[in-house]
Length: 357
Image 1 (cartoon, helix red, strand yellow):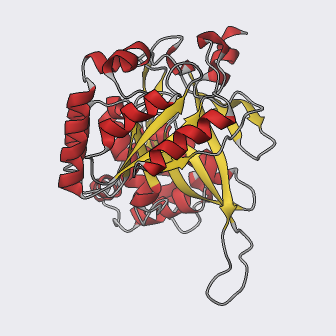
Image 2 (tube, one colour; image 1 turned 135 degrees about the vertical axis):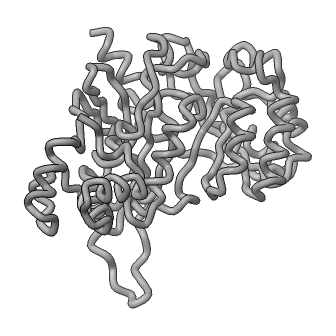
């Protein structure tokens, strides 16, 4: 049975026309599923009964099963999902700051905003040495429908809050599952579906240059984030094997071309790891690497402790000194607030623990 979420609005309209049904029913179905969160065709009351029955015979809507979850004291929730083939993936809801009252001065009943962090693959083939996602190997890509299942679950299970932002920073390399991720993004962004603005959707990549080049031509104003984590090839080779195929000189050149073509900022994610890349020498290397790159921002992330990799964050004073050096050198820099420190918050940790039990 086909997952109906594999179909774009146009494809669903074509399916209806092939059934000799009015194509406007496609927007009704999109509204029920993506905006109202209705996961049963029988409850789509403005569709003819015969059409509801036909949809139910030919399509499924939602297949995820919740296997486990953990909630942090800061409100971050990590969900572990079981797919139809028994594989496991993770998604995270991250609460953001309260939204201000509207233009009338009235406070909304749903003022809290939530960012959804999505997985794009089961496992990961890139083997970054600070990430638990690939410790049990790569299994397969997620389908469009499975990615959208994550979004539906998060949207339907955030209490008194709105799902306003999406980041592809969970398990897997999004640009290694390019076609499915981009198809899912177009539905997430569609006014007929989730209607989440393109600038509120972020794709994070370890630096697959051909895919970054392809992304330039998509005419989507999504945010691009590069997992950098080291500013010289020797260091980056140690923790990110992808750097051996796409070294820093090629990566920075590709980022420059992306910025010129799209006029969009790129965020460079930089995990600060104690004793590896968090001293002032590493900060100087980072400044030298990015100083000529227009529209670049660095997002510093103190490492989550991962026992399997013997990784720990540096001290607060070292983090602040690193940030201060970048700021004084003219680099646009932010420091990500630690989230989910009391749970298995890092990518792949909950899935890994569950599979090892």
